[in-house]
Image (tube, rainbow, N blue to C red; front, side):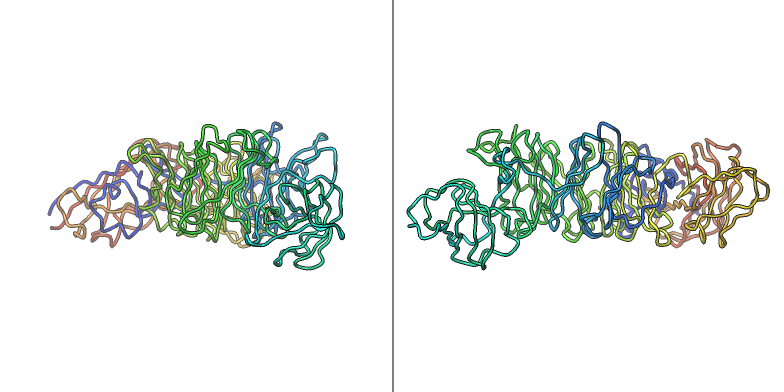
Length: 638
């Protein structure tokens, strides 16, 4: 019989993928856990109960939350299929704009960027919009307006991107009556537009062509090869030419896919029919995409060319402009970026998801993004050793938690990378790049999480329970979900329970004191004594289970028969502790409330390998809990 001591002072490797349990040589085995649910690893090594949520308001039908900071303060934009709501951080709606231009699926796939005065939103199937406040303080949601070529003419064409969609051999002719093709065509002329192959659809009406660098407005479509137009500028002649382009964005060829600001330029990444094109506006003029003569401050347009077609999924402004496609990661270099000094290079070939559009998130200079497989979270950063960008997988040890990612968000205050999953649960990674800490865990909210967002340093969640959707704020001061305060006068023992709490396990505080946990099956709650105020919230269980009890360094087989003798937990400001050390879950009577210090317990029962954990913490009591380390003394039968 051998005695051994297993001391775990850190959970900085997070919850480990079960496929790694055979790798007893990994250091992660000593710093990880077999299960971390509703628990947050700390960068310093410990683990604590995750924050609860405070219910703010109901948001029926909302599919996307967007943080928007203006000079007047922080706001949340809630996008539904029938409206767009603007809310303050306490959940108060200050404006409702209807109807919404996006349906539910499109709202989930939106790309956006803000410049402090307006929020620009785009989706490849819908004309892009900008959200802003006018001079009277009213909120407006209106289509983008590119800068006019002639600001004094309300019918002027716009300085927007143009592109060639028809094959290069397709020729176009402008014909003015019976005039010879060699005659000049004056501005303002009504002309026939003829093409040598089908081009026109009804969607072209009121759109623009650019022929030999001059604008022609389409007034009528006769057939796929014939249309009528109005010349905005004079044409040198009416001969056929291949020098012509269509509007890059519009009902015929779709709209921008992704958007960002970089070096005082508006960046548009891809569109429905030009998925591999990127446009940068004129410097200081975000809605001017006139390429001009290539001066340093003029607009830029280029195509991403590689050995396979690229579909731009996101553009992101970091130290360099980064472009994430379905097939790789690109970097645009230039200090500053100019038409003549532009350098575009493919750095890595991981690719991003095509069936979802999780946004990138910056963490300490590295850009985190979801890989094309949907099972990886990659860290895109320049490395001195390679003198190139690398994209390491930071979820390698916990890949089982990265399942159907829908969105990414970095909570800077808590140093948590939040990954919204398709099943409505939330995976988080505690990250400290300077200490090489990446610790994943999984969280459930008594419903399905539909959206996550940050505004003003606070994290907001859109949670669906019982067919209703609620806006909730992550709050370190509570240890339940969907927390709300109810008051009445005079005090009473019978309280009406909100519909969304019925059927759940609810924690109850009355007049500031904890009453207990209740399984609510009726619309009323009866307290043992009258109270003037109650706090209600849904319980959630924090679960912590170690990987192994037998130390690998002790020269003992990992499947040895062993008996835990004593388990000592080092706790910090912990009010309740419920633990299983061989005789089922039991609440431990701590000496202080809250308690900080070591608390030792005698363990019971024999175990073999991973058949059962040496100890397991599982508690849903709504109180703070932080575990700093755990020491297990055990006897091993050789």
